[in-house]
Each structure stands twice: as C-alpha cells, then as structure tokens.
Image 1 (cartoon, chains in turn purple, yellow, red, cyan):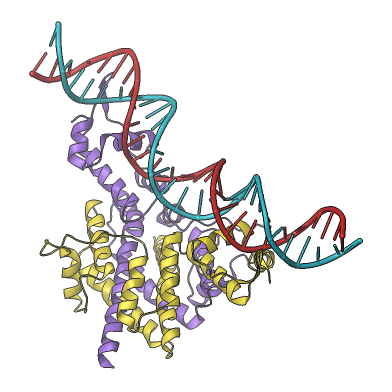
Image 2 (cartoon, rainbow over the protein chains, first blue to last red; image 1 turned 135 degrees about the vertical axis):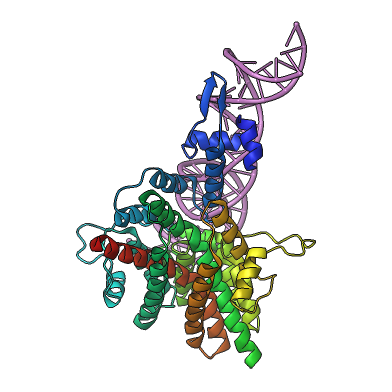
Length: 206
Length: 206
DNA sequence: TTGCATTGGATAGCAACACTCTCTAATATT
DNA sequence: AATATTAGAGAGTGTTGCTATCCAATGCAA
C-alpha cells in the first residue's frame, strides 16, 4: 500500500500522514525506491490510535507521541510505566520546588486518609494538588469526607480495571497506558450523564 | 481598588485583566471618570474562578465564558442547566445528523443497560458515543460489563454529589455547574493514583 | 500648577499549535 | 513518451491566549 492507499484506508489526508511521519508519531513505511514506500495494516491501526488520542482524548501531538513511545517501548514494571504515562497526560503540572518540605499538602492529606501507597514524584500527585487548590480558589473546596468517598469509589474502579489486565506484559502495558487515556473521557461522560439522571429524578419528584 | 490593585490582589497581570474584560469574562468596574474605574472583591473572586477554569480545568476562554454565563444567569430547572453546562465543557462534539434514526448506538445501549433517564440531545450522550467509538477504534473496546460497572459506580458518586447540593436555587446551580467542571480533574487524578496504588500492591505481591 | 504616573480603551504583535500547501526531483504507470 | 504519483522538506495558514504599545484623559504629589 502506498501513501495514498493509506490515506484512503485510514481517512487521514496524505499531508497529515506526512506530518505525523515527520513528528515521529507514525513509523515510516518500507522504502522501495527514492520516492516510494509501502505501508501496511500496522500503519492503519497506528493512525486510528493517533486519531483517537489527538481527537476525543484531546491530547496534543507532543502528548500523544509520549504515550505512543511508552506503548512501543515500555519499561518493565507496571508502576513506573503508569507513572510516566500519567506524566504525559494533561493537565500538565510543573515539578514542585525541591526545597519545599511539603509541596502537596492537600494531596498528601487525601492520600493518607485513603491509606494509599504513593510516590510524591508521581505526576498525578501534583495534578491532584492543583485540582484541589483550583476548587478551593474557585470557592468550592472539596471536603475530606467527599475526597474519601470519591477515593474509595475510584479505587474500586481501579481494582476492577487491573483485575482484567491481560497476562502478557506487553499487552498489559498497552492496556493500562491506553486504558488510562482512552477510558477517561468515558468516565467523565458517564459521570455527567449520571448527574443528569439523578437531577431528572429529583425534578420529577418535586 | 483600581486595576493595578486588582492585579496585585489577584496575581493576574493588568494586560490580562483587560483581556478578560474585553472578552466578557469579567464584569467591568464602576467607572469614576473617563480613565478610571474601581473594582472590588467580586472581581477578585471572579478572577480566581476564571483562572481555575482556564488553568487546571483546561477550558478555553470561550468555554469558560459559557460556564460563567450559566452561573450568572441560570435557568430555572437544574436538569436543563446541567445540560447546557455540559455542552460548554470539552470534549466538544458536533450535533448528530437529524436524519439518522440511531445516531448514538453505543451510548444508547449503555444507558439502557443502566436504566438511566436521558435525552439524546444532551451533549454528554454524544460525548459518550465518541469516547466509546474512540476506544474501539484504538483497539481497546469497552465491554458492556465494564460499562455497567463504571456506570453504576459513577451513579453512586453522582447521587452523593446531589445529596449535598445546597438548598438555595442559585447556590445549587453554582454547585452543580462548577462542581461538574472543577471536580472532574480531581476525579481523574484520584483514578490515576488509585491505579498506581493497585499496581504497586500487585508488583509487591509478585 | 506643574509634571510624572496611571488609567481605560483600542490596536497590533507574538509564540505555540496542528495542520496544509507548495515545490522539487525522482520514480510509476499507461 | 506522457502523465501521475511519491518522498521529503520548507513555508504558509488560521486559531488561541495572551502581551505590548499607544493614546489621550485623568490622578496625585511636590
């Protein structure tokens, strides 16, 4: 398959495919001459993945590249690979000042209350801190009880996810990394729909 | 307080405040002369909210304006106000073709399985459909069982949220609209941390 | 009251982003 | 032989979220 065939098969414009090649999101085809290369099904699948990440998931090209690199070349332990995947996902946070003895007070309190194992260098800790601070700044602070309720519920979901992890390591990394990214929009949509469902029942009951 | 005082009090640059005024995110101060206006605490609070929405929550200026307008001027029923709020939130989806008899097959199946009340015009339905289609395209389809598990759990969380809704209508709208937007990053961060916690315990157990 | 600082308001500029277009020389295809 | 397509590189485009510059009017301190 040549580039125009790949464009047809994937629904992505030739110019855009060339852009992804240049940006290193898509592996090159096999060159058959100075002006020709052939592409196969792996390119079609990869393009679908790229479009899913840059489209519905809302990643930038940079973030998508980071995720794809992790899938292509995962580390050996799940814990740190997950950490790196989350670091590539929005919202982007900057590392805390090394001199600060307690850079994430809100997040630390929440995680201690939940009795969760965590590493302060893990990006999601900073993300949690930032999100909690933002809610506070906006005048809607999250109470410890609510945080506990949220945390417990989400931990159930996480356990559900990891119980269903494929046994083969390579597939496991793909499952966890892509699952983190791809399932988040589903979770947000379901939460929004659940709110509306509950609100509708309340309105009807009035 | 003049504009430079507002800048000091909020930590937002004068030029940026002017930008928000122009864009209609921030209400004007009270003009005291042709070249002077005074700002008060309501402007400081609003700026904090704007920064929370455009920063950690990741909204564009356009989206933030839509949310703020809803908070300023809510409708009377919670259900439709929530609908409009979700419509302003990412991921943005386009309306389905009116001719299509079943524009959201995946979302419909999920919501029917969950026995949830929903309106197909509600933006989160399209968001769910898009997210489910993206997961499929990327090669990680979400099984009906998983969707059911996610949906049930998130419905519990939604019920928890609405139980704690303030009684006063105006405050209720602010709570639901801002809570939808502001708490989402918290939920994502908690989910990511829960995954890592579960993964760490698995690694240790090996 | 003189003179420097600040203000509101308008306009222009800028850097990042995700493409998209154009061009060229080398090949394929017919 | 004529036409189309390709890889690869570079420049151009439209959008976004500020940021900088200017101006004339005003405030305020000496």
